[in-house]
Picture 1: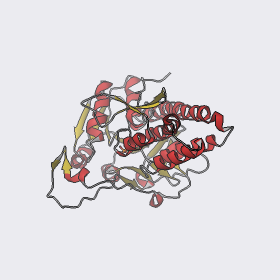
Picture 2: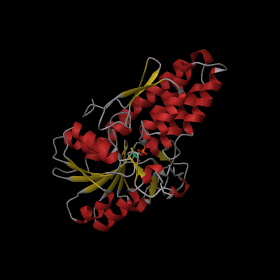
Picture 3: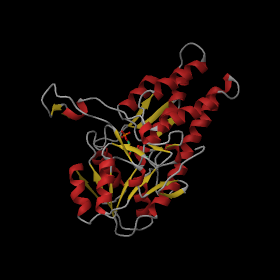
Picture 4: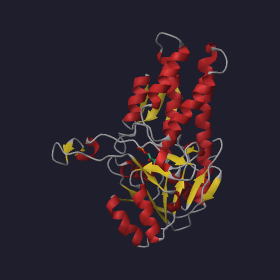
Length: 340
Ligand code: MRU
């Protein structure tokens, strides 16, 4: 039994992939039904569904959409083609390729007449495992949070980033559910404001006090002595523990080390890519200029100006005090090898 009710971030019913449309929050809470593979790909590219574990689940269910959408040709070919298109949407979160890979392996078992049932079972298993991993990793993470702690976090790592239970922010909610008094400082997370829009919304939903800050204020906050720890998620963790996460995470890790504040990463083992030795091998998504030089349709820089807009950065393992997975709290030096 989960310590707190998971959000219905990504679900599949009646041939439709149903997601909370995260681009509308905090203004509107709306479930969006996706009935074509094109719509699934657009939703991922536009961050209507986002966060590494949620991307994996959406990708898996996206293959069921490929089946229910119909169309000509061989069913297995249609599924393979959908997997290729969905995998190409966003490169950094390893969970997307991992979940699609699992689905394709499952698709090779049994007869093609069973394909729909086989894939539905596998996708449901991926969601159920994600919820179970959230429950375990947030419990382990909560052991690092004491009564009265203020936790600084970046991006959104609550129920919206996963099957519904969350990762780093989920650990804060688990500590609160255990009766500890906790407060959250949420980095706004430019340019798409996942911290201000989504983390603050989730905290409000769960009655956890939250204060939003611009990233530029993180240095003074960390040196003020008012933050007990930094908790972030991850999009891909290399075998040596280097962590790719939302751009700005590296800066926070450097600041936290300088201020003597512990820096923790919470992520499921589906985010660990033990096939790559270190963070230099992690593909980093770069997004369009407009996200940086326009805001709400209004130009915030002179027209024609270029923008540098990597969506993620890589934090070296030695700046990470612990990586928390569903298996427990791992301490530096890290060595993630073998099967996930
Ligand atoms: O671009 P996004 O919003 O998909 O980026 C999400 C993050 O960087 C999260 O911190 C990450 O997926 C962690 S959730 C384990």
